[in-house]
Length: 72
Image 1 (cartoon, one colour):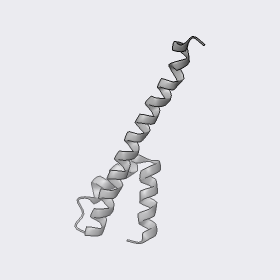
Image 2 (cartoon, one colour):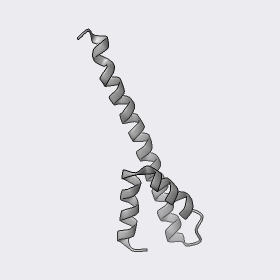
Image 3 (cartoon, helix red, strand yellow):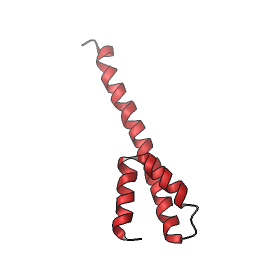
């Protein structure tokens, strides 16, 4: 597996976490140790990005309703 393919999968895991989750689940069960490591990394990246996006979404939602409570 080339470095470009790994970088592409990592970038896709960041931008579209469901791709990283799918690739991670499929490749973690592969016999090739390199694919197994890439699959694990994709899965970790995708889960972290999903959690961060949820945190940012909740923070943006909380900040958007804040003016209603301050009296503006």
